[in-house]
Length: 191
Image (cartoon, rainbow, N blue to C red):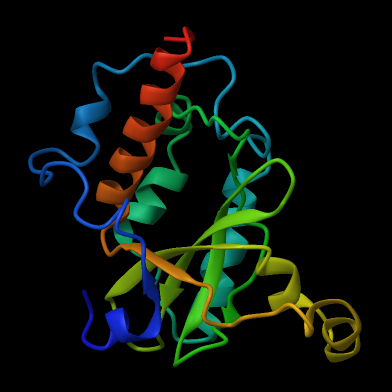
């Protein structure tokens, strides 16, 4: 983890260090995994490439570098089709980077649940290639709200420290995400 990051965010011990280390061809572990008709890329399938291009431009304007493994994944519809979600989560790249409420850096939401409550974010810092994956409940709307809307709707219950650190490797994070969801599907007869 990047120095000082574990002091910024709460640790999600259900995610940190999960699964074996990855080696070999990027996303090669997905080669034998079946594709699904209902997958996490379906919601924004037609817009994802355009969304990614806009996000790349917005990051460049702020001196932020999107991780290569993130860009490769988001450019690959064949990879999205491998991922199902128990909470109807989906890949969503429509939002520009927003200032992180704690420490330095920016947050970029990339997985949303169907109710737009639970989000996974990339945490990036200007001029650095290191990054983190974090998650939070009910944070995104507060981050993007105008000052007036924030004060009226979010300030009372907003806790800027309710951001949880998951990982610092996108492919490793996605493998854990895949395994968690597929385990649930298998346990509930949807294998």
